[in-house]
Image (cartoon, rainbow, N blue to C red):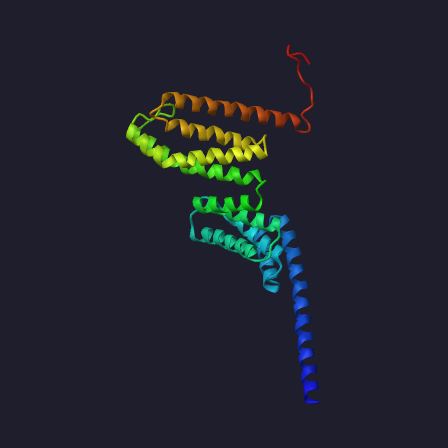
Length: 275
């Protein structure tokens, strides 16, 4: 008899806990919906509060955590190096990482990885940004944006030290690096990044042939390559020619895209200038 009473008591406790859990899940979804409404209206602080409540009520609700991370990321201001701003950026990264720790779906993983990579890039943590873009490429190898982002990072890592050295030498933009030692040191430091950047941008263009942003960075990467070809004038000239070709391709692609946009079929002129 005592065992039966004890069993009934355990069942009753279980039902109460189940009911409370179910209630929390419903409340969590309500907070999620309210957060989404606030987010769509650009009320990010209000949205963050709703998403935080949703996560507290139901830690397994991944969409709430993903929205929380995204809303926090929107509050981060690139280039503002303050404790509060950096704290918000790190909070967003931490929330994205918590999504990755769960049994997240493909799209949730890609969104989280891209979110982390973007935040690290804006926080000037370039190696971390590169690492997470590589993870995006592993999860979704057909995403051209991952390879483009790696190319941009490679250019950023290459461009900054080169411009610092050129500034020290007092060179004008069109002047080549005349100091052979400086040029050789830069080539040793930057060459791997240059090659990597070109390779990654090529991957992006193979997947998206009209990717004009990737074309624009191909131009920049070949100018980086040209400037450290200090011991080979012919190679420098060839690189600059390739860079100019990428400029032409970029402009032609942008023009073709603009012509395809709705509303571009207004009054046109023939070659003589007549309507």
